[in-house]
Length: 220
Image 1 (tube, rainbow, N blue to C red):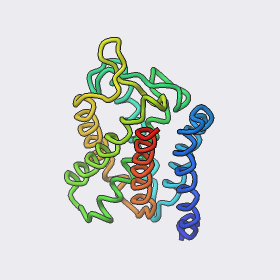
Image 2: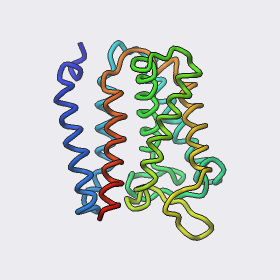
Image 3: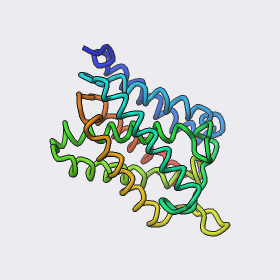
Image 4: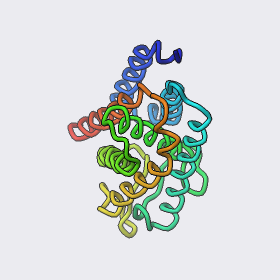
């Protein structure tokens, strides 16, 4: 058995602690806690991927492919405004290449991996088309939550002309649906294999994290 699976409740407890303390910290001392965003994303993604059971060579191939695809789509999006609208990334995600943080590709890959695992093992979806569609819906729901806090956390900012927008238009969400579907459909043969018992927890944790952030920022 995967050693992380054996101790997964400790891993879950640690991730909950990090995300809850991070949500509060981003409200009280945003500059200090935002500096840990790349580390938190890297470590969380590593724990999810390392928790995968019965994986083979197809897992890293599919994961790296999904990461590159997600990053490449964002590069096109940032530099053309065609896919998601007019937006720019801030500095919170660390090193950028062609205007897009490399960690954004990692984030796309881990979310697609988690979504495909949830679709197969929790929603019991066998169809490749339906699995990809369900993943795109999960990612859209998460994006709806992220967009409410992204500008304040210097994740990314959408613009209308020269003026920053507090919330993006429908263009962005259509882009997320289509991009999520395409990447999930292509990655399905690779990332739906095996079993990842952290997948559902990770998606729920991300959703709860951004719900808490939206609530705290609304209150304070």
